Amino acid sequence: MTDQTLVADAALDEAGLTNGAVRDYVRHWAGVTGASRVEVVSAADDARLVQEALEAGEILPAGEGRYYSRSYYKDTARSEERTIVATSRESDAGVYNNWRHSDEMKPKLEGLMAGQLEGKTMYVIPYLMSPPGSPLEKYAAGVELTDNRTVVLHMIRMARVGISLINDLEEPDHFVRAVHVTGDLEHLGQGTPDDRRYFVTVADERTILHFGSSYGGNALLGKIAHGLRQAAYDGWASREFLSEQFMLIGITDKETGRKYHVCGGFPSASGKTNLAMMLAPDSLGDRYHVSFYGDDIAWLWVNPDDGRLYGMNPEFGVFGVAKDTNEKTNPTALRSIDEGTEVLFTNVAWNENTHEVWWEGKTKTPPVDTAGWHDWKGEKISDRSTRDDSPWAHPNSRFTTTLANVPNVADDFEDPAGVPIDAIIFGGRTSDREPLVRAITDLAEGVYDGLTLGAEATAAADGKEGILRYDPMSMRPFMSYAEGDYAAHWLRIVGAATDQPIFAHVNWFQKHPDDGHYLWPGYRDNLRPLLWLLQLRNGEVTGRATPVGILPLKEELALDGCEVDPAELDTLLDVDVERWRQEMGFREEHLQQFTGLPEEIWEAHRRVAAALDDA
Ligand code: SPV
Ligand code: MN
Image 1 (cartoon, rainbow, N blue to C red):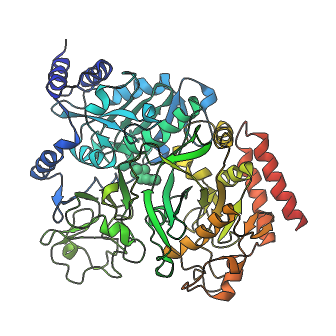
Image 2: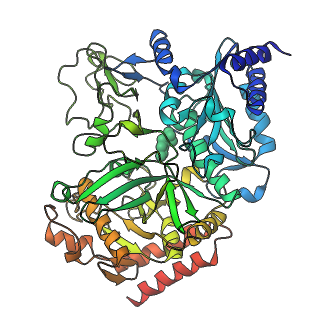
Image 3: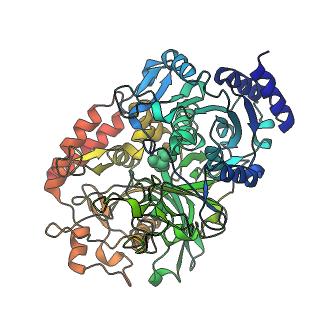
């Protein structure tokens, strides 16, 4: 036995980690990485780990129960081009999953990780990506190994962490092996031709190997590597469920006592967290209550007892974008990071005297008195050149807080049974063409709409105006198997529901063609089109049929207290047939990339195209 094996065994014994398969896995990677120490952690260790991290200078105080960390300046976001899904079957290759053979990637990653933990501690984090007792619990168990204490603190907030979750698995070997090694961040060639980072999910072996980052989804492996990529693959391989980058909310009608659940996908920077944490507008607050379940991931399956599609958020916390979070855009998020909430901030601006934090858009202008303030790189604001107008906080700076800290979290957010889904919505940022809401009652057309979701190309990108960067179901960065199979799996899972949810496409971002102002007030008012959608599903309104779905009649929308301009409402509820016909050509090219796309999807495409031609 090597030294590392003895060290690992001692740590596992001390912690009472008895699952033999987990022990073998920990021993193996302690050996590969050459870890000098091994420490098994549980959520109960949080206070001690925080203290150690403070003493080591890895985190800084940011108010009562709040902490702040900075990441290396070249390590501030997910890296899509270095993210790979590996399996042993080439048929798993899709357009977006960067497929490689596992025989190539596994030795490469073992090589990169070899010896990297000499002199360091390997933390063992047993976790569950579901409430205990969920029908999908079997797919939720994982053990992350990491060399980074701040990653441990994040995992304790983002997942349920504890030894008991992993000791008594029904199938002791059925857990995700998630290995994270930070690497020498100063010598990884990030973004250069000699980039040494790799973020690999070996999906058919349920093994995640991430090397070369300590940031977000690159390092908190329960979240998107397991929670999305691995889970999407597992859901497909088992034919049991879907895993999507979706928010999930509840809407209670206090008058009838009925509770509805809506989930949906939005490409990055389309306001998914704000929508997930939305409050009802004042004028509707007496009648409706909006509750929060999740802002980033939903697992969806059919409950055989009632034939309905169910959903749950596998996460335990929120890893939210700080930028532009303020009293107007998301007061709920601000309350969830108040003093005493055990929250972590990353890469925001921080004041060494007052321990306050700030980010662009928190207030209209930065603090006037710059004394004590540091930007996200740690530089004193007062030392910065007056010509330096770079942001104080990194645009991808984050707050990490638990679901329980969100003031309007649903009463049943931890119910392992999940909640029945009434509506699935897709939305991007589109300045024209897309109306405020269009409902889709046909399953194949709903899936087709999700597959053709996109965000507008920005001027900075290769952007021809009006052309979307397609982001199917908002899963482009997380796709783990081929898109044709993915579409078929959607039809299979939702098609198995006898009482199917209604689909809709929403767009809060239509702009005035002349001066570019937003036509729809957004934020809390976004509840209004969602209420209409639920009424349509209930048969309480009819809307009007168009080639691209059912749109509300003006008088069907609850607009009391809404500041939308009546003339602009006509534009918001209009279908620009010419622009739509042009879009259909782009969609055809987009879909043609995918092999094995089910004929139902092509039929849906042709139906919409023909209806537009006749319009
Ligand atoms: C995203 O980028 O969509 C996230 C953050 O949710 S991360 O976990 O870093 O991927
Ligand atoms: Mn996300």
